[in-house]
Length: 182
Image: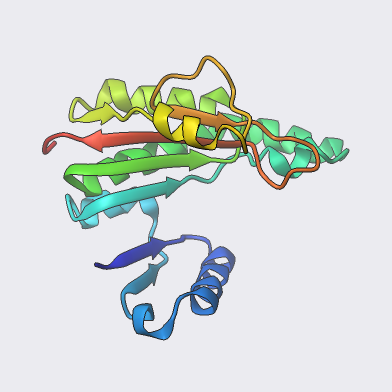
């Protein structure tokens, strides 16, 4: 197989390359490519090319300010939320284009924002007839001892709630499957 990572931000891209070099054994390094493309264009550049896609979307990153007391950061993050959902939808739409029929797509953020999570997924589901939700409830049952999930979510999405003193959350995950060509 082949693993293609894409990170548009230069600093994060360098960090990604260093992480790969630190953790991936030499024989497998050649199977990994890192690019710095605008993720909104990948679907046009490589239509129906990938079997699996992870969209770890830029988000308002609630963890960074949930446990801090910087009011300026909170105001900035709330302003960003209005713009981020549009970018997230465009990234997700591009990912659907890049996905082969039968392929699976995981969308993730580290925010509690419904506008950046469920609303983006619902918009993709309503605008792309070739995409179906995938039930994650079995996976959730397997890890429910470790994580606290928000109740009332749809079966294809999970929201791990942050807990003080724990190193995770919030983390939103939704899984979709492409059933046919666009």
